[in-house]
Length: 265
Image 1: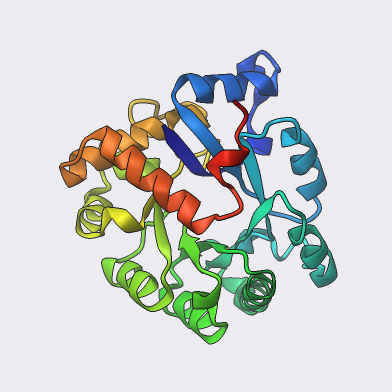
Image 2: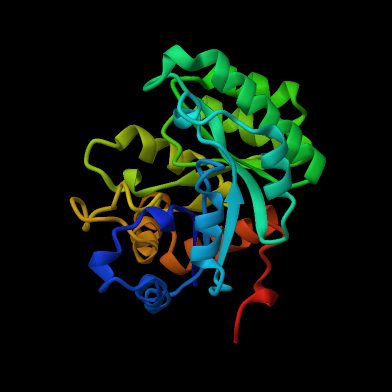
């Protein structure tokens, strides 16, 4: 069984599923995906996202403010804390830094990121980190904020092996791999995946974006996380069953509130 550790289910074009969100979940189950973590990117959209998945125990959620939306959506600190305390919120984020697309909002991003780390520590919930072209600042904010005490994951990882190793060794973090690993031009990422221990890897779709081979050009969906696992298995010389087992165990280790026992029979 697979787990999609990072997806944006509220961003899917449901017209491709006969207009029914239930069909997204059904296709995921048919692909042996037992759990999905739906990621919040703004506080304004959080209630609607929460309502969308409310009837699906297979789906747990996070709450946070994505760095690329900071300029448009001011972070209401009290609101983040209030939402994040809810039981079905298993993680804080998506938060972090993106200097590739939004270098002009560095200061705002850093302030928001630091507050997310503070909330995660207060609530003892792990962090979901977006990082692009901001390796040193990302690690510094995590270290300075004591993020090793709440844990977390660097999601959709495309940065250096050195950064991944520091996050694992110094902070106890996990590294999540998306469909990018299957792209023809992603040899550097495959080399990183090959070097990292399977005990610290998660798999994700980041759907509706970044559909893996052989689905490139299509809308991504949780069902395709199996293709991410298949590529990792090839890179690391493992069976797809081994990748599924390890990454699922890692997910439950990190997101302790999203336990197998709460799944429907």
